[in-house]
Length: 193
Image 1: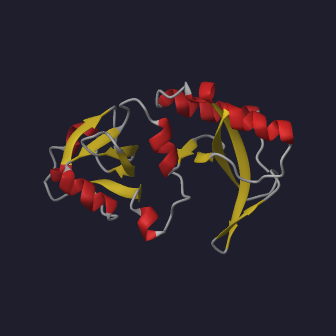
Image 2 (image 1 turned 60 degrees about the vertical axis):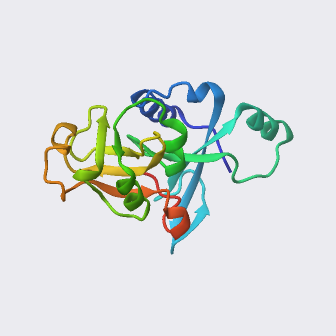
Image 3 (image 1 turned 90 degrees about the vertical axis):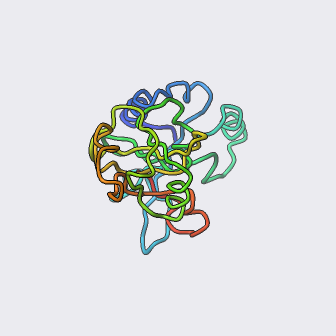
């Protein structure tokens, strides 16, 4: 069953929201946690004290949360999965990144060719990078965006922002972790980074 986050989980969530300028998220949405475990490729809901569990964070509108609480419906899933809560950090899901990241923090903007390749699961080459916003360091998780500022997916920077445009054009500068093309390829749509 979905449950309210513990104080420790809420602290991790708030820290991540502050880092990405999305504090207003909790004003409009009710965060709820679902404890799951993955065995043999399938997800199963578990007790919150089970070892090896993953704590998935779901966002529900305040009205939907009140409705579910009022009628005490027997539900397991509701709302939108926005990420996973770890013991020290919050990992965004693909939909969570699109939903939560409003400010220009750690974004890599790519041209049309880079957008197409990224959506096919490829990494980002230096020649495709148009702009980098935020204080991107090597190995940081970044949000890959097109020129319209749509979030295409999540990647891992191989260089810091200053070096990204200075490396050879055929070098990979952002490793593809997950992209919106996953929905068509039906691969890792539930993973968080």
